[in-house]
Image (cartoon, rainbow, N blue to C red; front, side, top):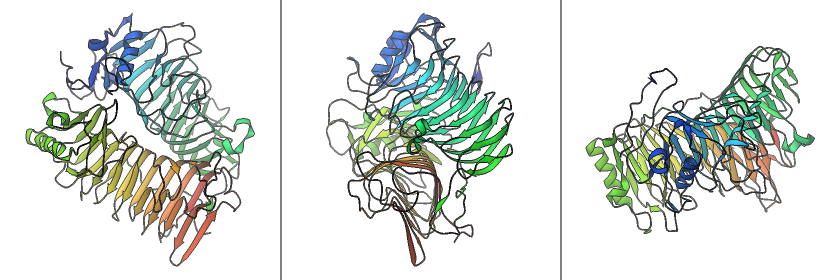
Length: 625
């Protein structure tokens, strides 16, 4: 029996019980597991589906006997799936859990259950110690209903380096809607297009390695909407409604080096009851474009900003701006922000094509470039829009090797792994002027091997990269969007634009893990790890970062390579934290060259040593020079 394909449209059930923008389905393929067909889930709101969903999660991760070592998509058709205890992700990789629609798929916990801490938990442990090696969680398009259980969380969310909680709704009367602070060391990860309704606290994040919140809406919380402590949070377009306190940025145990750090752009907060500020900051805060109603004031903060009067705030920097030139403004660069373009999900089964069926072999360590190009050309010839790879995993070699450049011809617009395609090598894919107007890659990762390159060489077409561990190159003039990407970026041409959300470049570099040669780069949520140059901007390039966590350090105390290397460029980073365990933090934070003069901000200067926490570094001029 094939999984049906549905129209992507605004749809209502006959009873008008739910509405959503799109439905998602997959082809009849061995890499797609159906919770009803393959595991016996009923989805009728009556049968106990706990065991069926738990088996499905383990199969998606490839950790059960029948699917050992192979990643898969677990697909939940519309329905209400009754559960009576926590669903737990036990594997270090995965799962790839996709509902048919956000409001049509409901995982509902019985009321009055005992000793259930969360409906869904994406780590096998409730307490540490643990590691930071839990990758590629992908949870999309469903609702969690925690019911009437006052001590229960909706989702206990744990993912490191790569992980996306996306297009999910969480509701209930419990403790925390999305709890990202129940266990140390999670992050970086992405929470995007998520709605939280009810609970004591909407979203809690603490003692972790950063998190990116993109378009999160929180409603009807009894205590607070967003709680931030001992981490860096980057947030855009945050909405909190009917809640006494919209945002708390806390200072745990009076340890300044572990204070919460928040960089926020775009906030709408309402219904506080007039007793508190909408945002209370005890740590480091950068906030702009904040609008509030029903609170005593918009922001109450420590540091030089102090009390911020009024209900709207254009820009707030809670502590002293770091800079190397006096004419650098006490403001972030303020680059234009664009949302990722929507790439329509293909609903015609005939327009999906599997690259594995064209001779691609994931376990022979032979170059598969020719077979992949053949698949691309066949897709174009038949009018297919989606090319996919079956999920990789198992004993090595378990990767697809790619040593040459693959052209992506129109009308192909989506290349993805089910669950993840492990592609590695010195080759890659090229989007050019003969490609579709928007081309998206999803769930492609080298996972420890040499990452492939995704290059936008087009003068006009757009490259979208989501949940992929790759090298991204801007070789043309077309736009680039990165979402949940543990990889590197090289903008080679002046005039190119890139918008990145949850970006995790790691490694050692003399020239920069992220290089901007005359382009425009906007980043929401960055975590990097390693030594050497992290970001390099030159030749008039403009780079703005909101929320950055620098983790790691170096054993070489006198390493001369700066974290940020600027040469006749504009640069700002708002909401920065740097820590290093048993190593040295970076000697040079910023090296900034203007014309013939170069200045350096090093760790010996006030406020630049130890585990630093900054509200803002400004390296630009209003005159644009």
